[in-house]
Image 1 (cartoon, rainbow, N blue to C red):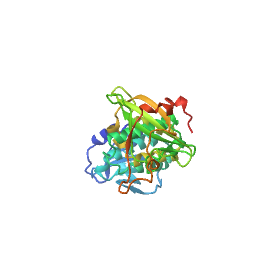
Image 2 (cartoon, rainbow, N blue to C red):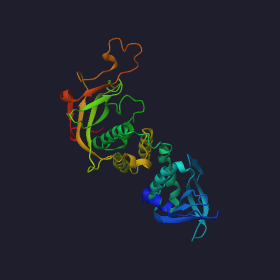
Image 3 (tube, rainbow, N blue to C red):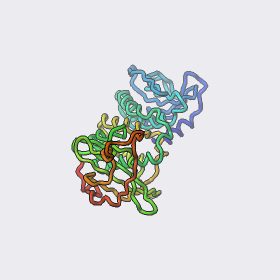
Image 4 (spheres, helix red, strand yellow):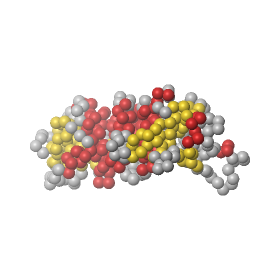
Length: 327
């Protein structure tokens, strides 16, 4: 069941008059329900064995407890009860509930508490992410970084760990042997491939190893299937069974302003026009602090500039992952 279907399930339920009963509809499995209480609050109910104990959790508008409920038409029983406490967070709660339901709805009842706690830990990074925080240009940049992570580095846990997610680090990916800066651009009418370098450190040499520039060229194409949510899904699926790596990925996505709850906003389809990997060596067109004799003049805090990639063929080393060895 996806978030849209779960949303429809909640909207189909009338608010009960009784404070004792919940109106509910079965979802995922015969012992999982979407429910509404007398205050109109949304619940996800997962049946658990009687006497189950779980640590009470309240976080950013979500509460999880083990309580005894009576779903209309059923007998009183113990449920793992997740409830959304704020209408403002309903989209995120719906996405969380869909993820949890699909992951643990069919799990053994005695395993559900641990599975839900794990899922909530992963989703904590997306609570509070604002709907419009990720601009279209930022989303394209994030898509390019994840494209490189998935297609060129295999989407493995080590690549997720090396991904700095633009948290103030010099380059987008950092290993001891090499660092990679990722840039993306949409096709221009004149065919030029231009990349804006945001600051003087962005193409400065790393402390250790070699520096590479990965250039991704795309065009928006409604018939294409490459979208930001899809590449996130592919990487997440590849990390199945590695809870730490999945949590690391979720943390970094949240820091960048991406949330699966708002995936519809970022379903722009891209057709890949070209992938080019350059080794940034002597003579490569770039500006760093060392480009300025004596450093920047007083009053100038930083410099951004644009690189035209047309003269950079001398530094081109690969146009597909076949010419690249993942770390």
